[in-house]
Length: 208
Image (tube, rainbow, N blue to C red; front, side):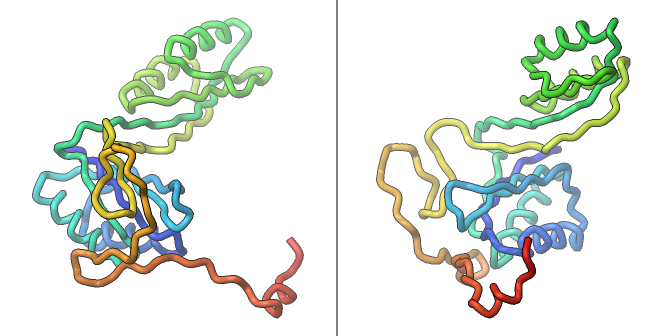
């Protein structure tokens, strides 16, 4: 069964490697893993889709929480959520088939990003099933190139995953910067602080 997990992690080098190595070392199967910035420049947000039973999912959560650079972990097993995937697909398009592909893209609320002499590039976002259905329909035209971001997810309603304690309920309460949060392993999470390079380091850095 596929499960969606979201983790807030410190925005610093090596965090993605730590998480990926944890999954690899313990044989957990990652279906997709997406990392992106958040509203807090010190934090990144990981959305991880794993194929596992409930027992394995609990192990994944516990192991993630033990990583020092992971601030908070949440799974959407019993929480309503919205999820989206983004896809760019380049299709072969002759003058005869071009209008058919454009019509299909419009039906799926896609956007034509680029038009070549014999190709079209389509941008499409939505649930994974929607993107899979579009790929199946346009495959006969000839797929030259395809790239997908993987799933990103967020809980429905007013609940928001943030650094300040428990999930916010969207009531408008002010959010303040939180001190380092204790992990389940008892170790404090570090606050990521960007180091300012010295003048000597700047002078030694080659142009560009």
